[in-house]
Structures are given as C-alpha cells and as structure tokens.
Length: 262
Image 1: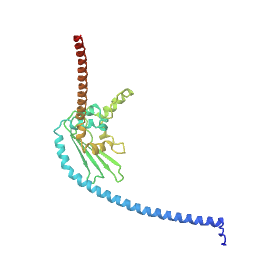
Image 2: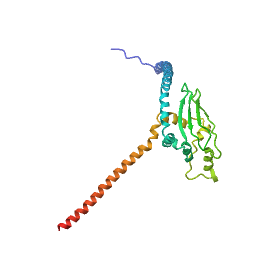
Image 3: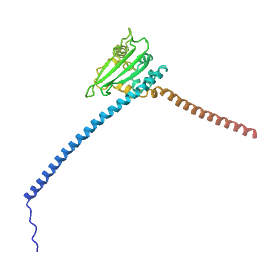
Image 4: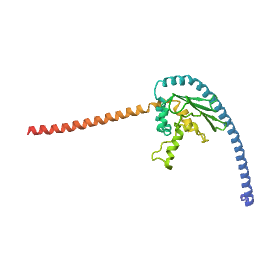
C-alpha cells in the first residue's frame, strides 16, 4: 500500500506562488525592454524612410517645374481663369466677398514654390494686372516652418489705393451701427496677407498648395459640368412633356373618331 502524498502547508503554497509571480514579472520586464529595443529600430527605419521620401519628392518637384511653367503659359490665354477657379472651390469661395471677386478678376497668374528642402515651407505668388484696388503687381505670402513644424508667415504689404482697402471696408460694413448685416459678407480674402495672428496651420495656404495648385483645371471646369447636367435634365423634362401632350392629343382624336362612327 503506497504512502499517502505529503500534505503541503498553506505557507509553502504561498511561497511557491510568490516565486512564480516574481518569475512572471521578471519575464514581463525583459519583454518590455526587448520591445523598446525593437521599437527603436522601427523608429530608426521610419526616419531613414522619411529622408529617402524627401529626396524623391525633391527630385520630382524639380521634374514638375517645366510642366507647371507650360501650364501657366496656357492658363494666361484664358480670361478670368483663376478667379473662376477660386469661386468654384468650396473652401476658398467661402472667403470671397463681392469686392474680393472683383479684385481677383485682375489676377493673371498664381505660382506655388516649395522651398528647396520642402520641409521648411513654401511661397505663393499672385500676379495682378493694373487695377483700381492696389498698386502691387505681385502679392506674395511665405510660410516658413521651424523644426517642430510650426509656421511663421511672411507677406507682401498691400499698397491699397485711397478708399479701396478691402480688409478695412469688410470690417466696417459688418460692424456699422453696432449691428451685423443679416447676410454679412465673409472676412475679406485679402486679410490672409495681413493677418498673422493665427499661430496654427495656414489652412488657405495649404488648400491652394495641396488641392488647387496640383490641378486647378478641375475647379475651373465645374460650372461647365453643372451646365451640361442641367441641360440634360431640361431635355429629359421636355421629352416627358412632349410625350404627355401627344398622349392627350391622341385621346382627343380617339373621342372624335368614336363620335363620327356613331
């Protein structure tokens, strides 16, 4: 007859359990240290990838320049190309008052130039014909980014002609008699050149650089596409009306024939 198994005291059980916990905690700590080492390697590769991507972007940015130049020459042949493009863009149009649109009719060319290393910022140049609003032939805005990515804007001072400062007139019309108009116009588009109080990202600059500049034609053509859709709908409606009229005429004719037969 075999001897019964030796009983293990509760103290010994707790002692074994504590030993297992210590081993488990030690393994977890070692795993965390290894994860940190692996993560450092991943971060290093991410930094290396960013540097390689930047080199590729710089390369293709230079390759695109002749095509941007050619496109600008072709755009110059189309009257009101840029004002139409801005009016058709949902975000930019929200910043345009009636007088802003009038002033932008004199806009002949827009150029976006990213700085050599790309990460440090970009410049947007607006070229204008002689106009009634300001003396400048070119209005420019530069966005300089520091190492942490925070923007520092720098703009051309607009030399407004007497009584034509749209940024002042915009604020006056909105606050006249201490009341805002029922349908107030948005703040002038040209305040973008003068207001540097917002330390956040330059939303308008980003929209022009990243959305409009790569393909402005898609926004210039928006009205034509809508007109074509509208014409198609009108034709469909006319076709339905013709069918209804023919149906009514046919019913009347049938009635007259029945009368004659009687």
